Image (tube, rainbow over all chains, first blue to last red; front, side, top):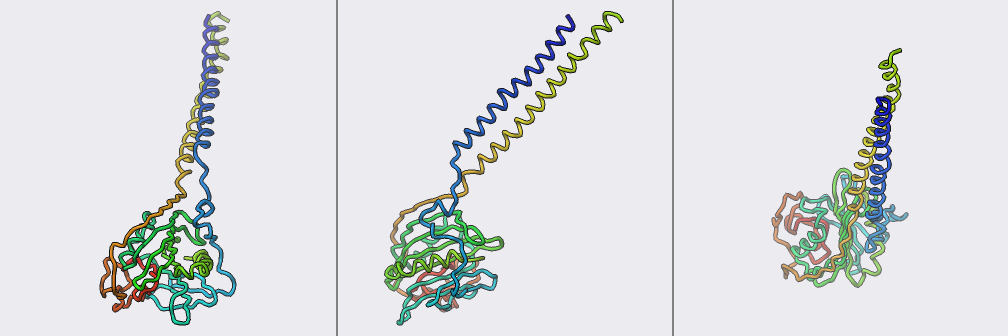
Length: 208
Length: 105
């Protein structure tokens, strides 16, 4: 009788173990699989955001000049563009027509304090309005974009300056390992189709 | 050998089996627990890496300026860049050009 109880106890213990294997782990694995199926696989940031698919985080083409800040951040700009004066501690290059009007514009500025990844598009639009720009229109924005040396949040917008010129703008807040930067590319709407590729390439080539 | 001693001897393998079973059960439970937590953490980390927010927002200007110059000393933050065209602010939008990346005015 005692022997029989011993075998029963052993059988029960083994049964518990087998049940745990069959039900406990089985349900955990199913849950993980179903969890994986329910979670959409995270798309590659720069592949998923079509409006910013031009962002290829590639070096500037050969023959481009380079604008560099003291802290080491910089961007390339194409032949026909030239460095122009801007705020101290920033880098600006532009393509100008014979009368000195802007045809294309690039600027790199260290983050000044108020810029945030969250709400970057709204911040930029608000800032442009406060600068006196009219008809500020945010067209696209995306976060988590991969740059050559960091991640960025970009906005594409348009505005009309106090001089009445309608500009198309790309503005990105890029966070590197040590600091954050704002890179802006813009061109009057009439020259945007021609300058757009250069501006996008310059932003793509930015390093921090 | 007495019947009692024989009984103890017969129960020996059964007890060992029982102990083995309990150890197996404990190991299985412990293993399941760890895999469950890793599943949770991977699931939580997955979706929030990218966001796309097409805004398509249009708005009217909050402020329209009729002058191309900004007032000197108009900074409202701790920027190191002096603000206002007369204070060393080299932003081209002071003269109707495009806006630079300075988050201040």
